Image 1 (cartoon, rainbow over the protein chains, first blue to last red):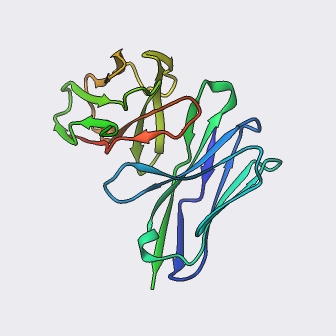
Image 2 (spheres, rainbow over the protein chains, first blue to last red; image 1 turned 120 degrees about the horizontal axis):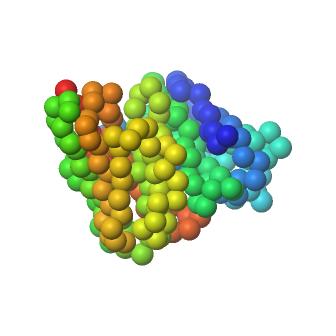
Length: 112
Length: 112
């Protein structure tokens, strides 16, 4: 079936790196996204990666894609208190006509 | 464009009442998604439309839920009759094909 899984919580110290992991079931997925949700707000796109890429870097963000293991990760370097939020992995499933499925979200807590 | 607009932002209703949530997608977007977010189940895809036509409603939890998209600029999600377990934040999102989904601010529904 169509499933996207994430761990639910991550706690890091300010200044450290955060790594949020995601696994998905569809090996043919072409488009993979990371969204961020701040308290009381909707989701906003943080970054994305296409399946023909292994890595994408955007300032403090690094996305790694392991297609063989169907594993996606988001690394945030020099994590700040303002990075505290819920991070969602999202995948467009190939069979599905642009069907966008989200993981449950990882709540990142950054402490001094 | 003002982005995806949802109304109301908050809704409190009594069990058994009908609830209608509204969404105006971004002009020109072909796809419209309805999601439900709860602590227990994360972000669930309820239904999505392409060019006003429902493509997949397999996420709609029960017959009490229905969604319509009478034209390209308006969609509704209706719950009749509502139950306390329907309490959640309901998000609408819209997108172009295989592109970033833009989310509204959500409707926080409380059924008492």
